[in-house]
Length: 434
Image (cartoon, rainbow, N blue to C red; front, side, top):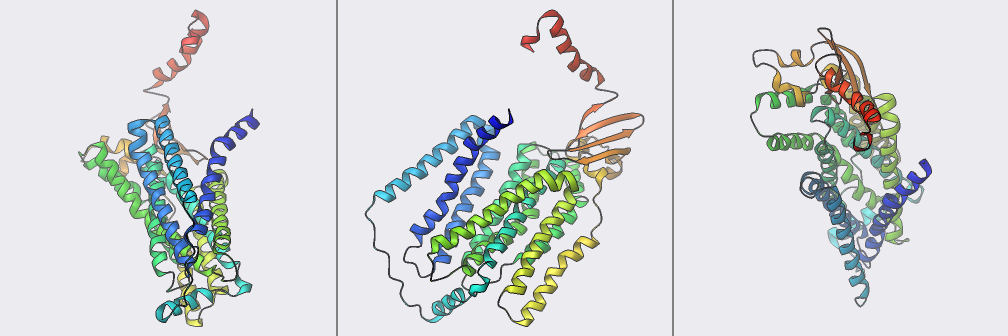
């Protein structure tokens, strides 16, 4: 019953997420009351929130689920939410402190306030929300695509998902922290820089990265935990720089959205909501449209394109000198050059299951040649996995995310047994126990 399943998902996921999303504007309203620099306060809150999210992703994927299990990890998350709610009730019951008067800034503070107040004229008030909507869309497309790439390179495990998620969130936390520090010094979101880094890292994904992992797995006697740590570090090196630029865009856009005539909570909540809508749209588009219809490489092209578009909007509609526009346009053109010049991904290598089969290649043979041996008959990047079919010396194998799951030799006995057991259950009455 699809309707029942959708309703259950709404109750179990959407309603708690709705409550969690409402905490940011509430916190902004309380934390920035009476502040002369609400954008800086909002950026600090966003930084702290993102640091907590990165820690939660790392602990859940690498510690809580392996040690406690899914059920207890879920209970732990519920307990953390209850503790946060209790803290809110304690704050609400405390006597209200009068808001500090916003004193007139002087010196450097006065110049910073002028920059923030004059960042965007009224006819450009839409610019921060649009930029953050595009960056939110690109960030989730980027995260989901890299999760799928890491499933091919590191294996389709919870560790690949946790590594990609933690790398994205940690990068956003670092970027938002840096953005909170420089929010009074510049008003140009670095969307073009994020686009350049995204285009450069994805050009490595289908060629160099699988071979790096294959050499590590084939030439190392390390235990699984050490190999996993190396994979997590590699993931961080690839994903964190782009995510940091995306994270820096948030506080910079908050400074663009500053308007003394409107309450900070209302202005920042609108920007935060648009960013979140963009992120949700990016996750849906990547999982249900881009990857199944276009593939992983064009999906990352789309992420770069969104960031280039955000950069062009800032260059065209933002208030800056002609020299800044020219230099920014040149930098925004760099991702297009990287996309055009980068070679297509090596599908044979991506489908070879480097994380599993590299250790079985003899040391005196060429690793890449042995991993890609055979004829690739079919390769499809679907919504949840990458399926490939290969023929080698008369044997046809079907692999899911690089791991062989079926063939016409070798494991045929196991495959036949999977079908025989239910048939036997129907005859001898053991179906209830299978």
